[in-house]
Image (cartoon, protein in one colour):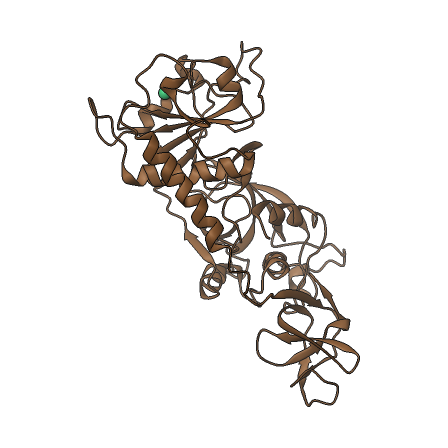
Length: 409
Ligand SMILES: [Zn+2]
């Protein structure tokens, strides 16, 4: 199972190395680094594409592509995404540039990139490595703003739920936006004795406003309100506010704050109803399922509780707790039933490093040849034993290869 964290840690393991792919003769190009990662984790590839064309290429391969919108400052990539930007080379051509996003906020991102400079002379022969076969640069850490960034794409993660690390803070990977302001938590100055306990409760709140920004502003340390929450739900948006590993100040009870995650919801109507939208119910149910799964919290009324059960308040206003819990329960059951059909053929990927591995029309040494496979990563959809070999059927339909000469990924 591939997760964004795996992609980032794999990319980090390549730091200070020249990463290449057999299909790119120009060595350590920025694209070669990303192509290598894409091939390592999937059966897709960028196959000798200029960086500037990688969004198009990713889209044509069925990968999720997000185009940057400079007017939407909150639209930012996630950890594990591959950003693509415009970059004009010395010959005046915009070949673009590409890298891996390690973390991102509204101001910019930390990245891992190969061949950042466009000029390098790592073998010190006085010739720009870019112009040499097998040239290129090395993988380095970098920081960037979003200037010139045209968009980003991501691999098809098998499981969209799970935790992500955003600038050192733990959030659900369902988080769509991150609020970059410092909010109240047990890290705040003057706070003692608020350390985190085992998380076994989710406390549900409403904002008492239909404006999510006004709601979130009240949690900033600068507001001096001494309140905060981990998440803000606003229709289809799930805002990360306080990392889950920290206590937020939302329930009015210090022990409950230490053992719970607080989810706030923007209202769709004002007093006296204080309702929330259907979209907010859906986002909230999704988030609840993800949190409960990760902390092994039962999805029931004992563990998903309204604020007013903890302290004297009308919160969470018009939020129907029974409805929300039922939606989360149904969703979590739906997740388990859709993953049930395990009768699907088991496919796996192998790496071919040799250059003369024959493709056979059928799984036998006597079968006719259908060329050779190039070094790279291939998906095997079926296996058979014959003539003393274990054979694997190539997903491309080209034929069968002897798995003895490959390594399983
Ligand atoms: Zn509340």
